[in-house]
Image (tube, rainbow, N blue to C red; front, side, top):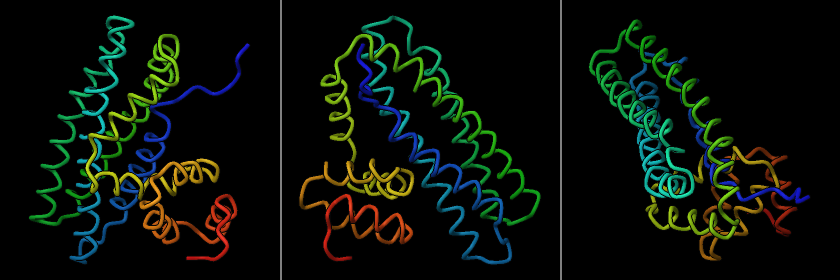
Length: 220
């Protein structure tokens, strides 16, 4: 019986997305409405999250759902419908954020916080369905090389700014082994800037483990 882990299209990006969501929710929970910079920073992170979430679901619609449908008709139906609902929720959150930006008020801030909390909660359940039911279909029908090719097409569709954003959340979300695998899988010219980013994002212990895994003799 093969017990080796299968190629998982969902787990890495979902780790980053879960951290991005919970960190943003935490930011909104403690917004200081009397501090213009704090408000601007919190709302900017919210907008970055909403844009990333929108692009992420589009990548799944464009590159993963067609493969699911080829092998099991209707397999992507529930999640595709939820994606449409997520786009509506993203639009609502943007509208509420604009109201708060224009006229900071405690009730408006708390309403936005609760709305984001509900969005995050629904997304956590949504991602679990993808990581279980969708992966069951993909693993039964596709070899790991086929799944890697799908991921390659997704990555090819992502521009440099979006990739930088995802790396910013992947690095702290990953465990030490995953971080090392991520960096060794990058083109050589991309490794130094990603390592510099990792140094700024990781604590001393996590950074030391990454240096050891990559056999880096000197700190950056």
